Image 1 (spheres, rainbow, N blue to C red):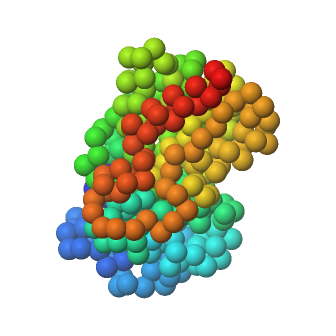
Image 2 (cartoon, rainbow, N blue to C red; image 1 turned 45 degrees about the vertical axis):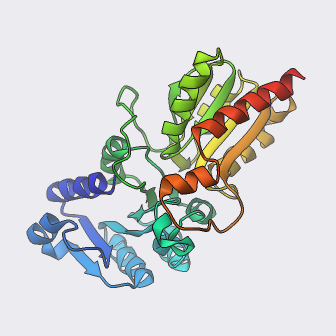
Length: 311
């Protein structure tokens, strides 16, 4: 996914001399062609992310379109004040490409796990947050970021994730994609959890339970119109995400459905990381299993909620 994003940035930069790239101590070989062909618009800075955000904001205030890439935790926690005051306050066109959203960097431990990035950035006015499901969806996203107004945070997954999206439905920032329709429950996903939802839906169908899936690749602004449309006909709504239960997709959906009084006749559940520092070392898959962000748990939650309604 990261490769797809950066290659697309390079292609767009060849066509648009307003596009700049800034990296933070990234490995050798990252965007080599960009560096060689457009050296005046390529900057590889040291481990000084807060300063990089200031540079990016300055360029954007001069009319440039700036793409910044580094590890998600460094972009969000380390640079929070600069994101608020330099980018969002001025609504400048800087695109933050955050590597390792969620628990991708499980081998490096809790310091590198971006379990809170969506929550941090959702709180900032003028920030747009997008989490594509796979590399092909990323390729559809990046061209739209060139002219999109204001700062954008793009949450990258691990890479080499299975391609599960199609271009049958137009990709548009801020518009959730209906992936499947069913009458028994609604699953709302973002990022790589779309794959988990699809696998769960297929298994549930075999048991006669038909669910809808809404892929909310854009967490902010949330597509409330689509959520209302797909939530109204079903008795159960479940969100699933690779993020803390506090402040992420589940929180955004919960706020919307409560304010619209959906819960009088419905059951709602969030599947997410608990309110802890995810601990231990291992792989992303092992971390997701540890915290039950899995196909099996999603199936269980939907069945349990159906049982609760029936009794």
